[in-house]
Amino acid sequence: MIAEGAISVKAALLNGKRDVHEIYLRRGKDSRDVRFIMKKAAEKGIPVRILEEGDLFSVLSGKSHGGIGAEVSERRNDDLKEGDILYLDGIEDPFNLGYILRSACALGVENILLGKRDYSTMEMQILKSSAGAYDQLNIRVMDDELTELKKRKKAGYTLYGLYRGDDSRDIFDTAFKENALFILGGEKRGIKKEVLDLCDETLFISYGSNFRNALNAAAAADVVLTLRYSQRRGK
Image 1 (cartoon, rainbow, N blue to C red):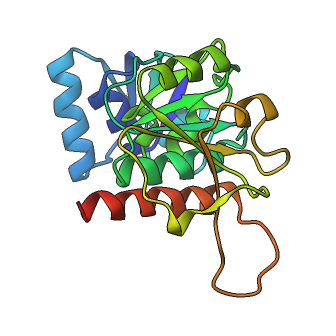
Image 2: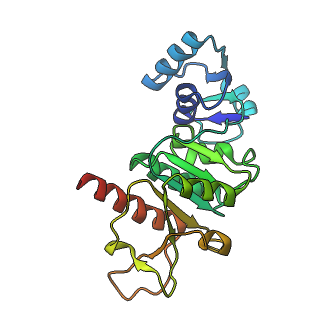
């Protein structure tokens, strides 16, 4: 598959989540990013092919690559590390997913769980919309989500589901416990019932106005991640 743009190429080169087979560069293209990429490619023994603009557009399908791209492998599945976890249940739009991953990376939640599906057709969209965070985070695509979540509970994680139910607590009145696992559902169907049943607490986002509609998944994730970061800073 092809990664397009300097940010995506740098993310693939630096984070060891995938193999980089070859880099494509428009003839005459020069910038700090390009010089950095060329240096790293030389260190890793990755070939760089210099192409005329017309030839480059036959290799790179997008229009915002900025004259640079790379042929890369699919992303490897990660083992998660210590710390908070964000599980995205049914968020399938690659741009929404990428925006959420960008926020998670920026705000210090580095472990991501995703449901089982083939992400290969959307990987490059996710990588680009996440500004490279997709290749920086620890991301695990689960074979069996319920088994995985039960394992995390047994290991001492508290499962917080973002869900507006009768017994849900206002997220702004919640002090998160150490080793939190946050669960966000897609906008169409939310969190699956069998996943909700595993949650230790369900939380809702209260509004500062009479707005009646739900936030989209990326906006809701920003609230959760920012609040978690704020609480950690206050300790």
